[in-house]
Length: 139
Image (tube, rainbow, N blue to C red; front, side, top):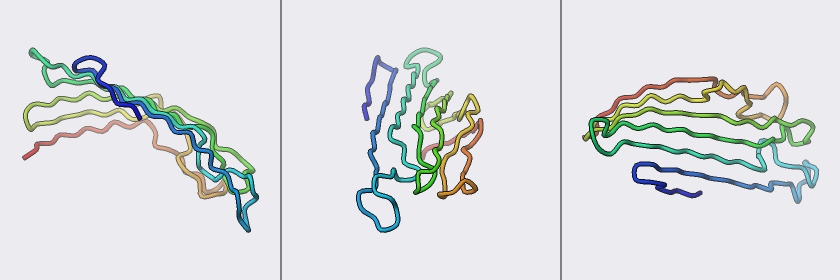
């Protein structure tokens, strides 16, 4: 994971994971099979910009990408779950102890499987496009 302040008020967080999850010894699962539900590659990027001066001070925007590679759908490796890319965005405002935000999840309504129970009827679809608003005061 890499975190950086690109310019004052502009921040970014990037991450990448490579996971070589294969069975090396087992009595029930074939040696060499990939573990179910574990992507080989996974990456994310989140960037925000928040105004620091003037009448827009405290107003911020964010954009994020989240990628998950193909994954095995069962322990026999008989089917794969497809890869997917989700996009997120946010608009927020902060002033003193007041915070308000609107978050947009899965902006392009990507159809994806978030998990598997190890068989085709046990596939769980991921959340569709969602808007979440929040307001908070910190004491």
